[in-house]
Length: 106
Image (cartoon, rainbow, N blue to C red):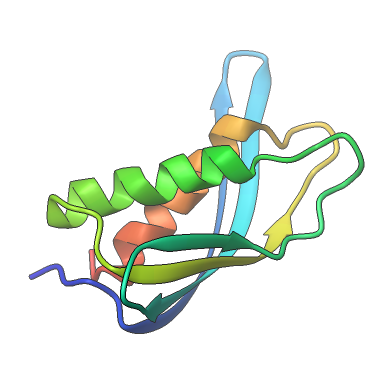
């Protein structure tokens, strides 16, 4: 049965093909128990690139899919895996969603 993560670290890298382009993005997310939901990014993004908001969306989608709600926890984006051509917001969002599902035990 899925449950809210208390102390979990998850690494997830997704690479899918959608037509002529790859959707690529990798995340390392740290899930910690907290009094309220919070998202913190410590990722080192290349100049001109930042998908923090897409990653936050993916985390929230994962919690809703796994638990039906967004639990009180702190989620920290500690690092990313970035490909200069194939990485995109949707790739990072998908990685974050799958990482959150894994953190909830799915």
